[in-house]
Length: 271
Image (spheres, rainbow, N blue to C red):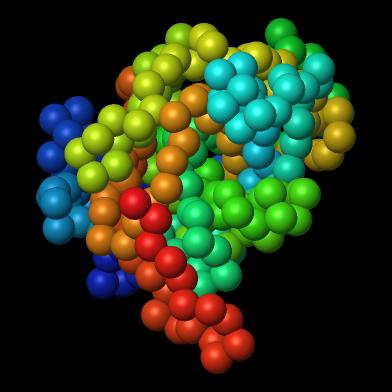
């Protein structure tokens, strides 16, 4: 089942994508965990003019760094011996079609295509073999990163935390095996990243278990599982698309943040 959040004249609504892919239906007995939006009450057309919102309403977005060997190598990092965890704030979350804003603080903002895991049950100390019991579904996710700030700061909070730096969608897919999915990222028609989830250092059950040993997971929480090699710069005016097998595609435009404080330099375009 594919579950979405859609903007309607009456406000955000939960819905499911119909079998034909061109309609949205009431979600039936399933609902998006952690989401208080009312369900869609009747069938509506689903097309290019439909405004989809981020399909998750998490209490936290927990990310995993350096979880593909080739990506760790391209940034000159070693592969961690245990999952490397960091947070993105929920204020960074946007949906399909919403613009990624390049902040004036950074001159090197990059894409990171990732598989996102959506938690369905409050859980703690989950065994890897039981991880499937607490997973609700999966989303495409883009862990947008100000790479220059990441290097300057030596930690990830500012570089990963800007508003609009976590596109997610277009929907939650509840029936998917995450073990070996094609994952890629395209920027302005050029394929930048192309790999498979089977290349992860730590697989999805291991990640869910490891995170749950540190913090309680709540319904709707998202675990971003790391990005493959091929990360690169985003420039104003381009489109960036994350595609994952069985999950469809997440497309966002890129533009500059319209507010430039007087005490900050004008951003420099990266080619």
